[in-house]
Image: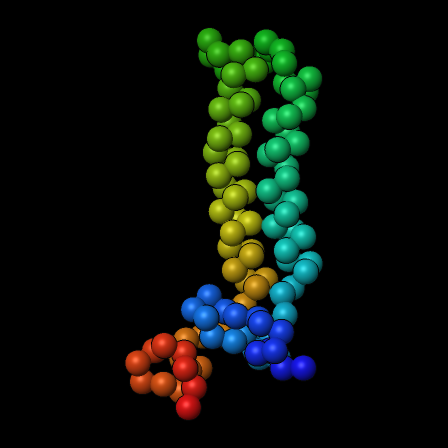
Length: 106
């Protein structure tokens, strides 16, 4: 059974050839998932940071801990994004045989 019969259309309507698309690195995708899960768990576990001490200047721990996670979460999200880019390689646009860049092969 060919890809056309299955109805596996790509983003622009062309048929995706799964034999030429490299497989994803599942280990790296798991690492990216853990990086995205850490901030969720850390902030949902309120009992771990619902206290006043240690203070950072006039700010109780409860507030500055959550504010710190704004920066940590953005760093972890960006790291997960970069890992996913490495884990899921794609065929470059230079692999097409056409001159107009539509992806149609002759």
